[in-house]
Image 1: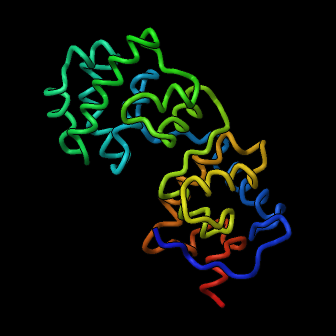
Image 2 (image 1 turned 135 degrees about the horizontal axis):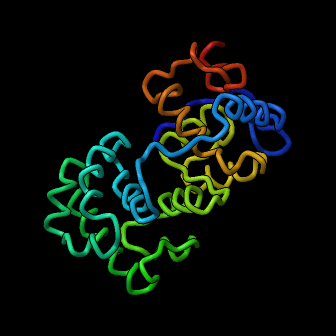
Length: 227
């Protein structure tokens, strides 16, 4: 992914943005949206896990369209196994990578029953051991279900972090590590939701809506492009 250029040199703490500016950004986001939530629709922990697995390289809107019918007939590990991989594949065929996702969902459903009594694990190591569940998916589940202050770095967060100056990194792992260092603890629980929403609706990839951005005064990308 292309990194947008930032202006200025790193501060003594190794980052581009002052701690006071970081706090100001999250205060603005918190005031506008005190309790942000995922835009994926779900009614139980298993549905959330499946929805997040399906959301890789797919929009939340598309996933919600698919899961509306899917979850009406299969919203537990056993029901998913009863549905079977063939029918599941047909249900999700409008989503990217649907064949591999269907295979992984069937496998993880089996493992949830076999190893976790049908429950969703509450640890990163146990979650990433499930087929189709990577660190990002696990972090979303841990944050949404168990209120842990994880930061699930997707393409939106990667872009927003580098543009703003919250991070300066070339990999998802580096961005996640840097965000945990600079985001004040009081805001970590909702940090990834705020950044995802900001990237989805304001700081868009091709044409960021800078004039509609409530935090534009702190943005290093904006300063670079107006200088």
